[in-house]
Image (tube, rainbow, N blue to C red; front, side, top):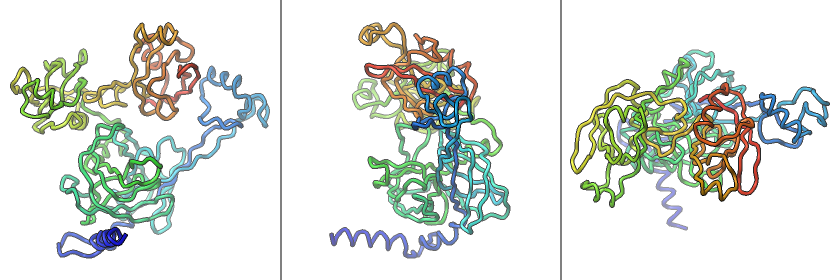
Length: 471
C-alpha cells in the first residue's frame, strides 16, 4: 500500500508542479488560462413512448403505426391509451449531457457527434454561468465530431496544438463535466498513439489513462503547453465507468472536417474500393516480404478506382501518398482523409518486388459510409447493416426460403439493437432474398423515416423499427 501511495503522490506532483521548460505549465495554470473556453452541453430529445414503456420512438410510417396499434394497445394515441383512441401521443423528454470547447470567439463550438445526435434542443453553459441555445451546424459520425453554434461574441477560445508532437508517456489533462459535475479537471499520461478501434477505423485515437466518464465526451484533451491535442470521445470499460483506458480524437483529424461542418456541407472522403486484411508473419514469408507490414488486398470491387488503376487481389499496399502503411488499419485513415479526385501514388508489393502505382481516388459512396470501405472487410448498406447472403445449407438449417444474414451493425441498426447473426426476412412486409433486394427497398425510404424489419433471431422472429437517418 505504501508503494501505491508514493507512486500516486509522485504522479500528482509531476503533473501539478511547475517545470523549468518555458513552454510547459502546470495543471492549475492550464485550467486558469484555458478553462473558460470549455463549456457544458445539455441536450433534450423528445421520444414517444408507449404506456408500457416501449423503448423506441413510434414511427411515422402508417403501416408501422398499424402494427403498434395491434401489438401495443397501451401506447398513447392508440386504443386503450389513457387519452383515448386517436388522441395525441405524449412525447417524453430524454436528457443527455456532454462537454465541448470554443474554437472561435464568435460562438463556434466543437464537441462529439454522439453528444448532440438526434437532439431536439442543445443548451450550452459557459463557466461564467451564461447559457445559450445552440444550433447544430453539422455532425460527422465517422469521426464523431460535431460543430455547434451559439449567438455570442468575444468568447474565450482554446489554443490548438499538434498531436503529432505528442510522445507516449507525456502528461495530459482533460476538462469536462463527468456525471454532470461541471468544469471537472482530470490528468494522466498518453498511453499510446494511433490506436484503431473495432467501431472506427478512420480515426488514429490517442489512448490515455486520464479519468474520463459519462459527461466528459466532447471535452478537450490538453498537453502541458495548454494546447488542445484531442477531443475526449470514448472509454474502454466493462462496468460502464472509467477503468484506466480512455480514447481521444486527434485535433488535427477533427479540424479536417470542421470547415465542411461549419457550412453545413456533406463530408467528402476518398474511396479506393478494396477489401484488405492484416499481413501476418506467415503471409509476409509466403509473399517474400522482409517483415509483416502493409495492407493485403483480398478483394477489388467491380468498377472501383482500385480496379481502374490495376490494383489486384494479393497485392500488398506498402505506401500511400508517400506515407508508409505499417498496418492494415493505417490505410482506411489515409484513404478517408484524402480528397476525392486526388491522384495518389502508391507502392505495392507484387510477385516478390515493389512496384509503383498511381490511382485517382473516388468518393466514398453513401451506402458505405458506415464502414471503412477501401480498408474494411465489411460493406455497410444504408441503415448501418453489413449483410451477406445465406447459403443453401444455412437456409435449410434455419428452415427458411429467403432472408439475408447480418454480418455487422453500425449507426442506425446498432441503435435499435440489431445484432450480428440476425437474419433479415422482410422490410415493410417485402420478402428479402438477396442483399441487392434489401438495398433496393431501403434506397426508396426518405431520410428520417422508419421501416419495419422482420428479424429472425434464434428460434423466433420479431419486428424491429429501423429509422433511416440518411447518413
